Image 1 (tube, rainbow, N blue to C red):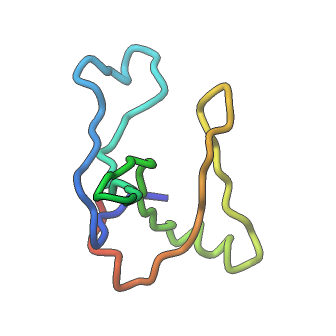
Image 2: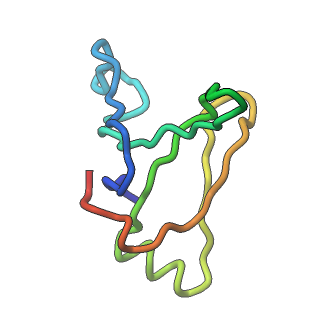
Length: 97
């Protein structure tokens, strides 16, 4: 899957400047378009809850999904943080990142 630009995104997260995938690190990092997830409370107070990103499956991945395959979520952390996976409508997907 590849990350895509989407309606309502706020910015693109980039790899840290010191990151070099050629030195045995995880791999090349591409820009990740994100939307800040914010909760609004009483009196206008806000709480940053996290980020949303949108991904588009490749034709091969889409064929596997249509054949009954599932979506895997790998969390590269020692603990499972709260996550959510869903589907957005096609009109919200703008272009590939």
